[in-house]
Amino acid sequence: TVADGDYHQGLGYVSSFLMLTLPTPEVARVLHVLSTQEKYLQGYWKAAPQAFGRDAMVFEELLRRRDPEIAQKLRGAGVVPEAYAQKW
Image (cartoon, rainbow, N blue to C red):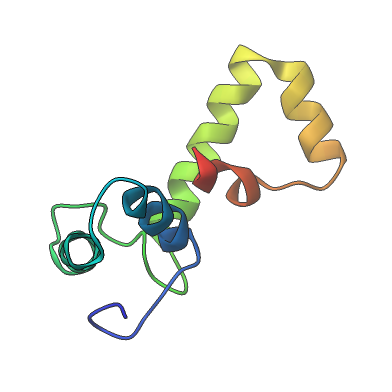
C-alpha cells in the first residue's frame, strides 16, 4: 500500500510497468519512494491528485496546439485530459 494510505489509480500503471522488469520487493521500494519523497512527482499519487490534474491540462493545451483536430474530437466526445494523460 501507499505509505500514507492515500492512493490514485495512476499508480497502478507505474507498478504494472515496473513489475515487467523488477522483482516485487524492488517494485515495492520504488513505489514507496515515489509516494513519500517530495522530489518525485509530488501530488501525483493521491486520491485527489492536484498536481496531475494541472499537468493533464497542460498536456491538453499542448495537444491543442500540436493537433487541434484531435484535441477537439476528444473534448467534443467529453473526454477530459485526466482520462488519457496518465497513461503517457
